[in-house]
Image (cartoon, rainbow, N blue to C red):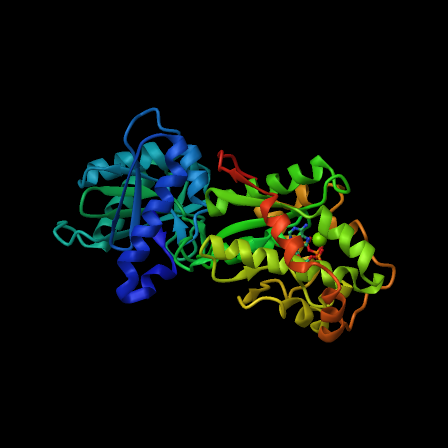
Length: 390
Ligand code: ATP
Ligand code: MG
């Protein structure tokens, strides 16, 4: 049973949210067998249709679906006290027997059920205490709580709920292009926007042979790790070598990074337009490196019309690393393969570049031609969710 998060607040849009969430869940649990997915009373039920369904796999996958506040793994049973008691003993007995104290908490969504919630809790609690006399009853601070929910179709027993991934269902917040590097920050930035319901299209700039095949594989692996949260992703791998060589040959060294980032933004915007993306997302973080000053970001952002979302802008590195660890991208991000940003790194990057100067430098370059060629040399790679957790 998956309890909906913010979705319930969305009033008239609610059914669109529920439908989107149901189809996201259906896609995510498909590798684990055939499940019946339906929604009632702000709860989505994911029920295995066959005995050979991989319920552990589906349970794991549902923990990463945005839009879910909490998850309960339940045992359904008939709506009689005998069946509820037997289900509780059978399904929760092992955990219950390890607790020092317990209580039963009941909810009665089926108002036709002949007992009140309190009566039901007392009845099941009394019988469980008789079955597990070493576990004390404590209704105020129990070590373990047995939940009983009497709903329309069946009664359900479960132990404590697990927190869900939160956020909004992927796809409800529109589409955006994520500039995905091999670093720690951009996968976290992608995760944070996906959590707000944004569907992502990834763009990666690749400078072969200055950056190796392994560096490219690393980025595809990061995208694959993000699919646990986002579902299937496409990565547009843009060949960036010619542009970097042109920058090296034609630009003053202190402007290398700024000009390179302006190229990245223009190309990302062109790819975004092709995919109906309404924003760009980067992993920029104020003050982290020379290209992430306000002045540098203004000069970089000036070449695009789309809004540029930088969800990490005000975070400390330690906070970003904590999220990277939680979502399982950190280990891959810290593999020591070079990124195109590190290829022609200026010794003294300009921390306060001017837009006019950047434009003057670019006026001497074939900006349009270089971009057209890079776009023509873009490879689309689809990465899929293969299950497994971090
Ligand atoms: P990250 O850890 O995400 O690489 P960073 O702190 O190293 O970020 P920069 O290298 O300055 O910062 O890059 C800033 C942002 O530009 C990145 O977060 C990412 O969104 C984008 N970016 C940088 N390099 C690439 C690349 N090779 N391909 C795609 N996007 C990139
Ligand atoms: Mg980087």
